[in-house]
Image (cartoon, rainbow, N blue to C red; front, side):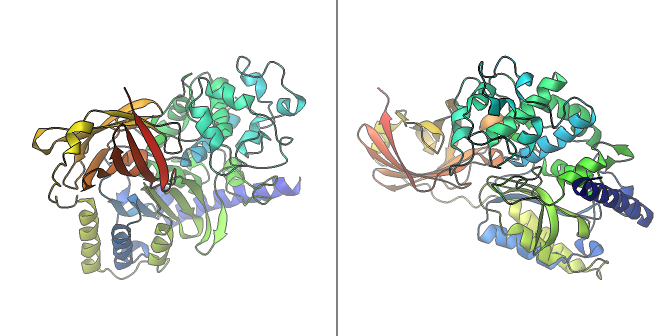
Length: 506
C-alpha cells in the first residue's frame, strides 16, 4: 500500500470513527436534518450568545456585506440570521462554492463507475473537442480537471479572463477545450473555472443528464435539499464552476454529510475514502502539482483544522471537525472576518450555564438585522432628468459585465433602471428614498433592487443590488450630452473604481 493510499485509508477510518463515536455519544449523528435543522440556545452547545450578537452587530456596522449567517454545532442551529436586503426566502448564489459541490458529485459519479479519475477527457466530448488535438491535450484526464491541473492556459493571469471570454462564447465546452496548452497535465495547478465547467459537463455526459439533474437524483434528494437553481450554458449544461443557488440551510447539509464521512442516516451517499481524500491537506503548494487538492480548501489555521468551500463575494462553507461545527455565510461583499468572529464565540466543548438575557439579546439583534432602513427624503429631479429619461447608453465590453444602462423617471417620484448584463435585459425599480424596491428582478428571477440619489445637476449616484445573485454595483454617473461617464465599483470585486464611457444609442 502506497504512502498516499495509507494516508487516505487512515483518514477514512477517522471519518468512520467520528461517525461511530458521535453515535455512541447520542449527539449529532443520531439526528439527520433532512427536513430542517433543530435549534438550541448557543450556551447549550458551548457558545456565547453575547459574542454571536457582537458578531452580528459588526456585520451591520462595518458593513461586511453579509447576507446570511448560519452556525451549526452538534447538529443544532444556534443562530440562523439574514441581513437586509436578503431575507432567506430564496436560494442564494454560491459562486465558487459550486466547485465544491461539483467535487462531491465527481465522487458520487466515480463510485457509480460512470467516470474514472484517470479517464481521458476528450472522448467525452466527441463533437466539441479539437479535430487535431495535440498530444498534451489528449493526455488531460477527469482527475486533472478535479485537481485543477489540466495544463490548459487558463487561470494564470490575474482575474478570470478565460471565464469572461467563455461566458460570451456560443459553445462553452468547445471554448474551454480550444484553450491552448501551457503545461503538461498533472504538473502545474491554476484556478481555472472553465476547467470546472468541463468537469461538471463530463459528469453530465457520462450520466446522460445535466450535472444539476444528477445532483438532484443522487445528492440533493437524499439529503432533503430542495429548490436548487443551477444555471445552464447555451447547450443546457450546468455551470460546473459557479452560478448554483442553494438555501444556506441546505449548504450546511453538505458540510454535515462530510463531517459524517459521507454517510446520511445510514446510507453512504459519498464514499468515505472520497471524503477522506477531499479533506486531506494538499500535497503541494498552490501553482504546483497537488497544490489545489479536490476543491475543499483544506487548511490548518488559527481556528484549527477546517475544510469547506469559498466563493466570490463572501460565500463560505466551513467545517471545523474538531469542534463538530459548521458555519455557512452568504454575502455580497467581503465577509472575511465573520468566521473569526464566530470562532471566538466558542467557549467550551461542554454546555455553558444558561443565559436567557444574552440569548434574548441575540434574538433581538437577529430580528434587527432583517429590517430595512428608514426611508429618507427623495432628492428633487434636476432639469436634466427629463432629457436623459429613457435614453439607452451602451458600454464596450468591460469587467463590470454591464453592456448598457437606461434610466427612466416618471411621475410621483417613480424611477427605473434597465441594464443589459452579459446581454441579458434586467429591469429594477429604483427607491429614490434610499430603500430598495425589491422584487424578482435579478437573474433567474431572484430578488434584486436599486436606489439612487442626485448629488448634482448632472450627477447621479446609483446603487444596483442583485442580492441573491451576489453582484452589488455602485455607479457614479455623470451625464454629458450624448454620453455618460461612469465610475463603477462592484462589491464582490469584479471592478473597483473603473471608468466606463457610455454612448447614447441613436
